Length: 230
Image (tube, rainbow, N blue to C red; front, side, top):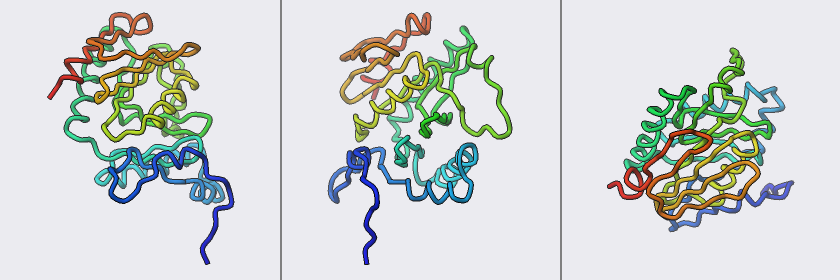
């Protein structure tokens, strides 16, 4: 007898259906809700679930790039970075790090995990925590993931990334406190700029992207560093 699903499958699980012979979508979506229920039944929720997911991610570091969880209960499995993707992230975090040394706060790469009240757990490709956020932050031994959204978050798309998933993640960042978000698409040569309360601004093949007024003086040469880089 084949077990039938007892609940309706949310649209997020159907966006990246992988048919044999097609390029693998990125990230792959797995319905993690049954396992989340089992974990909750044995008391693994909240910070304990954060720790469990970090252990799962660490155990699979040599097999996948990163594991994330959406508020709907979808486990997002991203592949390891290609040489190009790794370089693109490095180019960005170097510039953000240099700017941070002059302006304070903390610059982070893709190893920073964040946990939102809606249950989502993400690891943005780059992020900046403001001095004010750091001053208000009180870490504890029970804190495994950051429980607030960084002031500035960046995602850099790969060739197989789902646009729907990427934009949903950016909206989640803004909804949970990000002041500025950039979605950089090297293959469409565009940058989507997210801010609270306003429409998304799309820059087509820009030479640079400015963080003004939220990040005074931060200008990233996206064309030379990412779009035109070999």
